[in-house]
Image 1: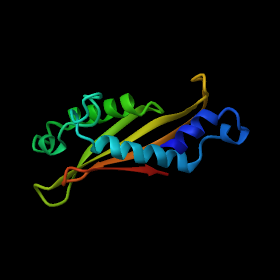
Image 2: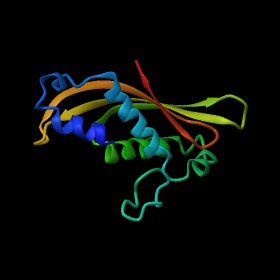
Image 3: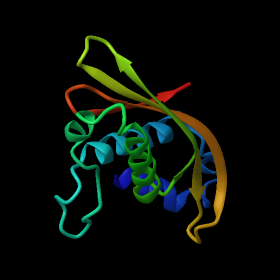
Length: 144
């Protein structure tokens, strides 16, 4: 995390860092989104809304709960990953062996690099694939 912070802080000073759309930066965000979505809401007293509600409980209510799950994922991403602004999100159920299912979301997001004064230096659009596996774990992948 320190490495990412240093790159964000020094991004304006180094002209090479102004070209911020490096693959490893998107991978940093992908890693953070994975950790964020797998954190359980209410576990951190100082950030009571950080993370997601129990996904297994929500999976029991599928497919009716799919719009709420999608909204919760997008809201959580935008609230706690400030570098991302979700443009659109499409979700669907992936039925392998009933009643085992997975939820697949494809999210297009604008990712921004900011200067020390929080002025956007560069924005790029990425597609993140969010998979809620039947074991209740989220997996986030950067789609090229």
